[in-house]
Image (cartoon, rainbow, N blue to C red):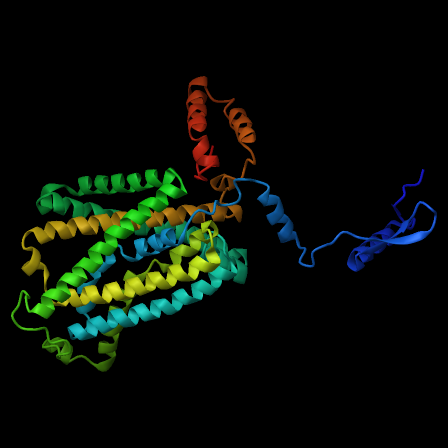
Length: 431
């Protein structure tokens, strides 16, 4: 019996393929109607942008763990960026910058020029982030522009070398300043300082293992503390300078020539090198603005919030760093705070380092998940190897069959207790 709508195709399979293809292109096809007459029937709509990559993305979207949970707001993004920018550098680099320039005014200009230079680079990331609003940041941008090879290289260098080294340095600065605040410089041995650094990093990692919301809330808390630290130092120093209550009676000569005889005999090329070195010091402190790209896929409204986050963060960082350096040249610290100032300053730097560690762990974790989705890392790092809770449970039990009962029981217990973290809060924690 003939169906009321039977496609009329020839006996040649190749011809059938050509006719089917052309019918899709024209979105019409010939059918044999019930009364025996030929007629036309609208074919289903097919997207002109149909491609294998679209198929891959559609299939991956069926996995509830493949898609990041959009929960980051403008404030969360701002906390992440400023959490990295206001790290340990701004509290230690001003002296390094001023050592390479002849006057306080030149040092302040270096901070302003460096901030403008960084802002131009950050503006380009706004365009890239809006064009590719996915987790992964630079990895995704390199992949889209130059292919998987450069994306793969960047990911491994960033995760295996760059970020671990940066976090180790920040953790050590945290531990050293905390030990200084606790007592004399030699109150802790070198090994004890390292253990304290590991404990600080472990604490921040545990907070981020509670999920995106916990890491974002920690970033918000550190943001408030850092902004208070930077702008309170800036405000206090400027007020003391304007009212004349400085640690020295004479005002700083902002653009006076450097009395150092060695600098006066320098060649122009050597002087230019000194200025470039100072600019690099300032650029190092402004680093961190690129971190928002690593979590763009988890922002509730990236098209609106991404430009706001980067531009607001750059404005706050540039103005705060410039004002803070002006205050430091007023030499307010000893006059205002006395002997207690050193302890307070060390605690502020320690807390700032913890905030920078939190931002690094938060962003790097998202980069690892994005890398696993691109097959740069094993896919279990991205929580993609199972599409349902039941499938994960069966997979885990099957994998543990060859292990002793005592070992498998402990792993199964841990898997059951962390199920909500992995499936509902998207914490990368797999077996």
